[in-house]
Length: 114
Length: 115
Image (cartoon, rainbow over all chains, first blue to last red; front, side):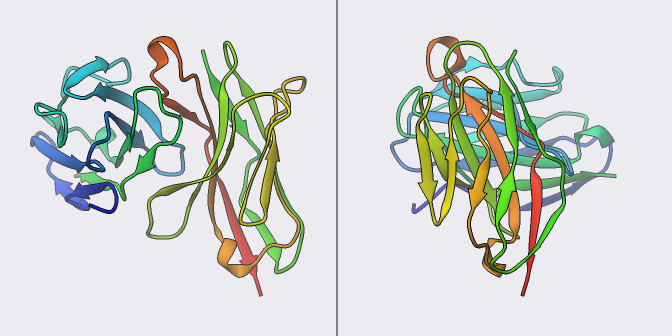
């Protein structure tokens, strides 16, 4: 595709529900990042994949957050037992090479937990 | 750890005014510095970057110079347009080692330009 795509664009969940957020990176991009952007704040790093390997998950806020990229392309961020504090925009970005400086961002998924 | 501090907004200007958005950083090693822009309803886009001290990044009339001595990367534009209204984020990354190029962002500055 022409760019990074994410789905759904908007998600409303009741507290305690599980959600899954999808990211389709640019074809052939090795690196994939997930960021969380709270309202009025800058994005914060969650996790990083190099192909299918999750090399850094230091930013995941709790064990309710889980991410995977099983075939080295599409990635899914899963949040179990959602809480109100999980409400944020979740951004996915990809870059061509490992350690490449230019990241291309998707439009984000806006999650609202009621 | 790494951190980025941006001047607080919002910033409101008239068309053709001069723009400065301040950005300072704290980082280990020699980070690369970025400005990203987020237009209403769109995703983050890279505006410009600089990879070493004294480098100047430029794009679409915007400029920023990597100042290691003051740990700053201020964004400037000589004459803003209404279409520049957006949220601007300063960011840094350490591409090497186990940082993998992950970005550390400032909190963002909302810019509104009036005709």
